[in-house]
Amino acid sequence: MPSNDFSLRALFDALDAQRQARGLSWSQVIKEMHQRSDRPSTRRLSQSTVSGIGTRSAAEGDGILAMLRWLNRTAESFVPGHRDSKEISTWRPDIPPGMFLRFDAKNIYAALDARRLEREMTWAEVAKEIGTNSASLTHLAKGKRVAFPGVMRIFRWLGRPAADFTRATDI
Image (cartoon, rainbow, N blue to C red; front, side, top):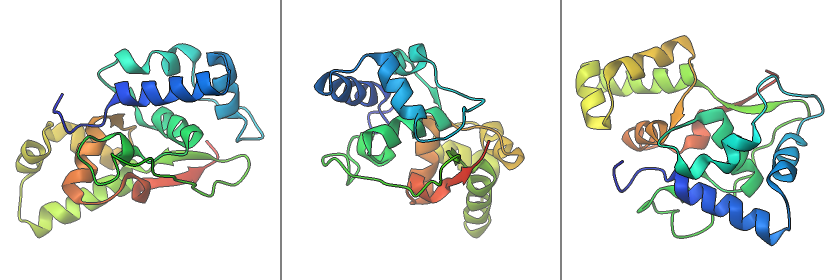
């Protein structure tokens, strides 16, 4: 993992510190993360997913968004060297009741493709600059899920914040 990648370990440490400061169990943390909706999600976070995030090398993007919302922090605040990484940035996306915050993979793909065309690059060249493979970039066109820390490399390459590529949805 590059030293300037999104840190899943730092995210875990922040989750655990907030959990301990508020005297919550991991199951209570999960319950709070899901209380933002008035109906159950078909893609609920599990306790092991949240409590084990610090030991993983990658994690599903929409789950990370739920964790970031609970902490009221930006994804960029967990990227060493990012202008927001030294401060605890707040982030309050307006999500109506019954809706969930998700990454918009098709929008990410469109931004990548526009930048690629502007710079007259192949997908292989873009992937090399980002530090991934071209298949992981082109699969975004199908609306596939994104994973951390890789998606943050894409946003860094685009020069845009993660929040630009989120949307509220009911599924």
